[in-house]
Length: 263
Image 1 (cartoon, rainbow, N blue to C red):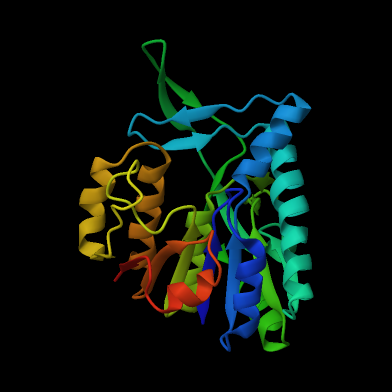
Image 2 (tube, rainbow, N blue to C red; image 1 turned 90 degrees about the horizontal axis):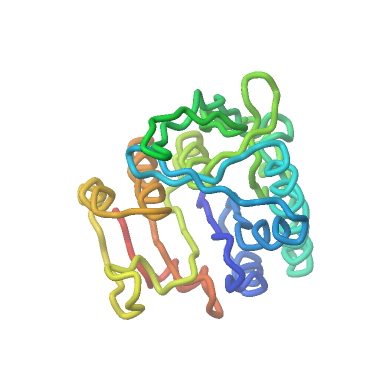
């Protein structure tokens, strides 16, 4: 089984992803983002986007009730259902899910984010949580009966409340449950860039043993993404390909190892 994670940028070629998935003869779970769509919707609705940076340097989006509403509109609404539509149009028997549905992804509510604001240390609490497990039986029920799960946030916490979670952390928990032999991450770049401003600086391969060092040197959103990759390998051996999601045949290219291979 493989896990395909689609980033939330506008440039991802969803039609090409769907065409490729229709042609591969392997079971898969698709996990997707929608951050660009969320930000546009938030702006149109007048909902301010607030980014928290923890004292350890990890960034996250502050998730109050309004932010969760916008997330549901963008992630579990428009992006998820359009993806299901595109996949079905290409012959994939897709079913859209959030972590809420059937308890697909169970999370634990975060105690709070330690941030420093105006020179003071504060604990900021919101509707966010860390994925703890996935409902493996639900996914197996779908896949064993010919359905392709298309999964996104929000997830559900211990009190059955919707919470924002990182899709990269969701991917790690799906891998823990299924021990996927391959994880494909489609992004808006040719692979992992050693220099974020240079599209020609693609790292052809990275050892998982080097991820800790890379994480320590990263900042912003990339720091959190590298951390999630480290955790993914802790849940079992796999191969990760970080590949370009903007091109024709993005899945086929990733299966051929084009992009950045992490193993």
